[in-house]
Image (cartoon, rainbow, N blue to C red; front, side, top):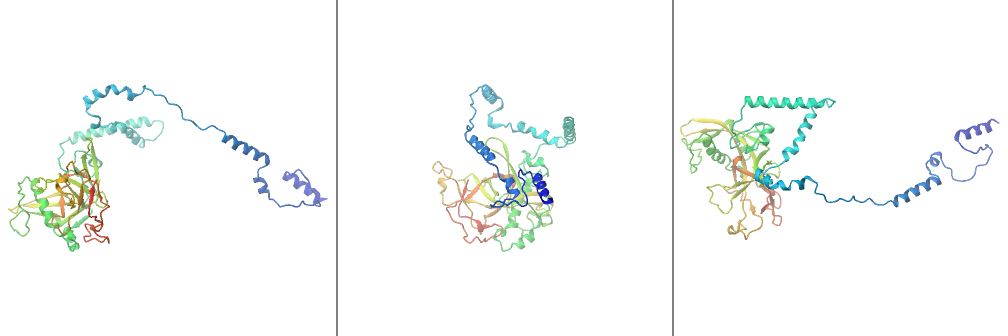
Length: 400
């Protein structure tokens, strides 16, 4: 019949080996879909998988390849040249091979400027020759000159960032401009600005006179009430703030390095030599925390009323540390005292709690950490001075 023929045709198309009639009874049991039957492995497949897993368990673990000692290396070959090399070039910690080892970065950087095709070698040579010609032209137009000892170079370029001949680097930008008088008016109630203007004038006066080669008597202080005394003015009453100060210094292994100081981060503590005029001789260094990095365009006016300038003057506004009174002076820097030096902040109301620093006098940054076994000055974390942020102060610090 037509139904029987259709059933045979469906069975042949589905690949089934059994042809059933529509009248044949269906064997009882759970119904399974075609997808389930296709995803279920047969008994032969299960046996193969079990054999593979058993064979993987019987594999031997990987063993390290034996390495024999060999003297046929360059390190052993160069031992005989150590003595003569030290006599010629100095001790091995006085120089570095880093420059030559990093030279591969130059052609890799120039490769990015090529077409990266089959003739890139010729393009690399052309780039190198072009750079050499530009260097010769620059040297012929601007012959090299002796660099100043201070930090009077302010080129906003990568060369000034890493030039070891420059004592420090501060950017030339004047975008963060602030009026000094408005700054003092807005912070009238802050104890940190009590003597800000007068102390800044007193700090810049000897620096301006040294720049103008005018003799200065350190015993003379700035008195704005005196009509016939030398003074320091600020062009447009403007104060320019910076976020970054870079200090170049020499490491203990006679290499040049650089510290990056940001007063908005925890990397803001510095160390200086104790001033020669200081009456404290129990410690060779002075420590401070930078509150701000600034520069002004200062004008010097002498007793004769003649003005000189303006000249750019960089300075740091700092909060001074002092040696902790818990450690007696006789024990500091002695053989009996082998622990870390302990520092503390003087009271905010003291006259010498704040001050200004010439960045060329900074030796380098330093690592000062709280003495956590002591307590914080303000348990509630509320500052008496918003500019000094003394709410986070601890009673004692370690100079690490």
